[in-house]
Image 1 (cartoon, one colour):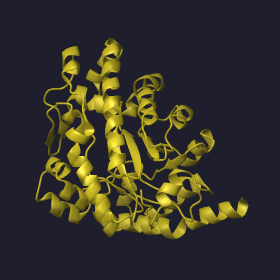
Image 2: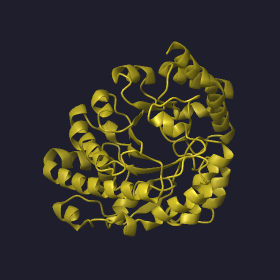
Image 3: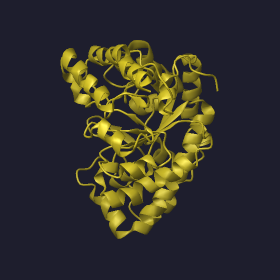
Length: 355
């Protein structure tokens, strides 16, 4: 695989020396960019995901417009359950909906075993096209939802306040939950391996609903399967990022899951987590996404605090603590990126001076 001209992000993933802190933003190709909305006028969201040319176009937009240090392929985590045979609908204002959720043994048995190269070939085509058009300017990230997060959507059928259906499943039929999670782990591992073969330089596993589980349930129904997936990534040189949103415990176990990077939401202090895990892995994050509604000087002060909390040394990838919101002013995102690029070097210079 050819080396990216800007490999700061990849070096930071592996805790190698970097001259400054790299930055990218979750959901950076999305609705906050007017240029994205122009592309979106041509096609609905799922059509964009399934059309390699459109997916590549919006993947590259934030590299061109706001100068991020990594691109992330435009797609959706729910393409996996869809490939397994579930009907997926996207409803404006409500989000993703599975009209026929998975609730019974029969529902689980009906799910197809996927072959990512065939069933999700359009994602692989989008990766190849994007890599070609990026021309190694920055690394490209491929991603998937975690088995637990995918199962939550599949069982609930849509967003939920109490997650009563999926919680009932793990309490009353843990055997069935584990059967489904095993199926999903195999699908995710195949999907991520295929993405690496197609050209991505790093992987991120989103566990959006990890935080709804108790610490013991998180270990049993989420982390166990993330470990399984990471162990099945064939290319051991590819950095893996794990994002367990809303999880405020188990940091030592999480740091031992096999990922190179743990991504943190904004509700924890990045420096405190760094101490807990004893610098074992790199950390990504973790500015509150709503900070970008503030005036530039406030954004800058808050960004400085995140970097200061992390402290001196390598292994920090600056990001938001979740995806950027659709009504954020792109100028504010650019101000954040410029500030991190221009001011983070001191945390690295200080490290080398002290080292």
